[in-house]
Image 1 (tube, rainbow, N blue to C red):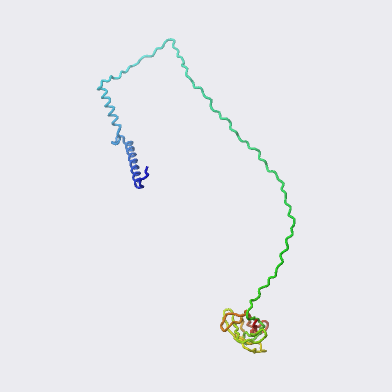
Image 2 (spheres, rainbow, N blue to C red):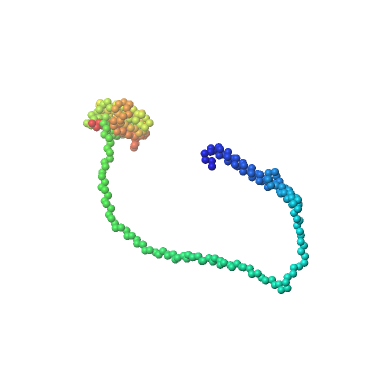
Length: 264
């Protein structure tokens, strides 16, 4: 109905229709409450006026008045009158519908499950496992080859000082000078010592040394060959040695002998 109309026009027409419907309902309600209202085209008072007008019109047309006949006495019947019964047709009852019995399902016997013999599988025959693979020997990785090889030779007690010493030599045992040895500890950057061309000290047992402290000084020290003074680029493995706070008896160690041998 509203095809082609805009939404706004459709809303306006809907509201007008709703308003007119409400107005008609209100008129009917007013007529029901007050029948003589001016909105009622057929009020009750108008009907009474119409009836009186009709009676007046009838009198003017000389309509004969109604004649009332008074009937008195009792009716007489012939002496032999016998009331006869007038047969009346009676309705023959039609047979009522008798429902046929419905089929009632009787449950069938539910077979009870019988125990079925189950066969227990026999364990499979033992199949020997294949022999384990022959382990192959994997050698441990060797230490990377470097220019120098360092090792701890010995420790000795000394109540006057604590330090490190040793030799820097060729494979043939010749003292090599101008080689820098770095020694340090965790939390301490350490110090550097340069080797000499000749061995010196007691029994010519060193061509480098480094003083750590006057008197016993316990600690863990690390030693390695570096290319120059102040360097942290290590050309050898790191040798670690411990010193003790006691300088006499078992376990006393203040000086450590460390040797570095050039590999080639």
